[in-house]
Length: 126
Image (cartoon, rainbow, N blue to C red):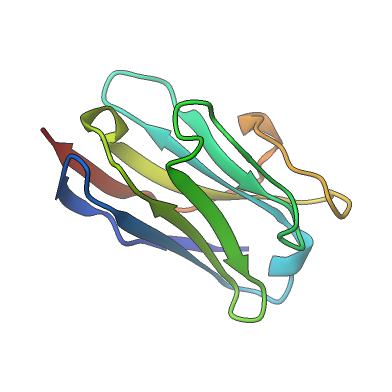
């Protein structure tokens, strides 16, 4: 699976932004998908995850209620809708895919993801 993230940009605090991640290959629906982010000088951290069928999701507490992860298996697309953005959300955002998971499973563990996109920069000004 190859992943290509897009949709980042420079926005103001309180604005919304939607990230997309396009996947190549036919097995997109066989992978748990996730979003991670990495701010300058910090480790890459979990943001959100979604199960293979899209029925289960999980979020980091810092984004719960503000971000929504979704997927379109027919189009092989992963999304992250971000609202009420804060300067603390500034980071490079990465999409990732985890193989070998059964239906309904989600994971926030970075080491369980096998494929990573190149990242897209999100900058939130105050």
